[in-house]
Length: 236
Image (cartoon, rainbow, N blue to C red; front, top):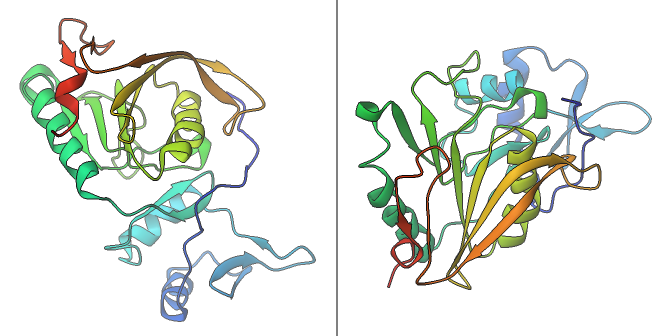
């Protein structure tokens, strides 16, 4: 898989404090960077923002510099994610109640809720709202899974970002089944069949999109016997 070219994100980069920057320096490996107006930048003629690798990011996590911060690594940038409203939280709860009886250690899976997926080749570590991951899935050096059988994002204010950016990222990672719970329209958008697309955010996109409304239902590709009614996904 060809590594995609960096593309400007629509969410703000995380702004570092002087104390956090000093913590990075103590960790080593940041000799050629400086702190400039809250951005860690590579010094030189262009003074470009530093592109974080997965190892860099995991080092910051281990140091506790990102503790209690709602951030994700996306294509080498540490981005501040949108805050979660109550409808978002309730939808995650309902999805967990629907899926957890089917995806658990007894069935050979873990249902991960807002936990990271490591995508080293994409310089990314997103934290989808829910991810179905096999117990024997490959992992990164830090022990994080590097793929999933199903990824679900719940979106309200972040709808365009989750559809256009994170959806493209999941397609590039080879995730075959991506569901987007569209809160404003109370519908479930089901994306499948990743295909290359140089014009998209991560140079990949989903070829198939099925828009499901109340009264319709869907089954995960990995477990077609499981029936999920769209009405059950959204809070009353």
